[in-house]
Length: 168
Image 1 (spheres, rainbow, N blue to C red):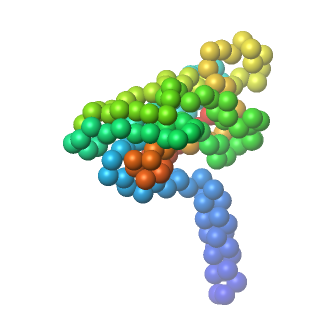
Image 2: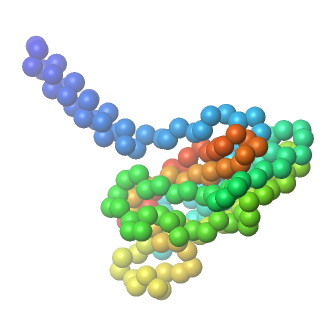
């Protein structure tokens, strides 16, 4: 009886270990001032398919809120590849800060939406320069989020991660 018990437990441990790498990432701690939201319009993506990645920051207070950061990007999209052959360079490594500065004024309950980053499933049978417009993504699993960095909110707030796949 003992050897039969070990085999299922070993398989279960291996399954849990494999599943851990694809487990959803945690969101940042709740913040009383702003909420970040990331949206990917479709999943899965197949070669040649496109999806939009939009993101926003919302003032969840009843007061006007001025957000500032000394340097860097106030509202920054992030894309993390969590499974599949690693992309070089990493996804969205070259994406510029789209907030256009280090300050943002939000009225009570105002939501500011940024970027409609076009994502495209890479088709390895076609030259990359013919697969435009869109940020080309190889086969794999990706997580998208938005990070808000501001002095007034005590540092960094991250949206929930949105998981999507690119399949061949």
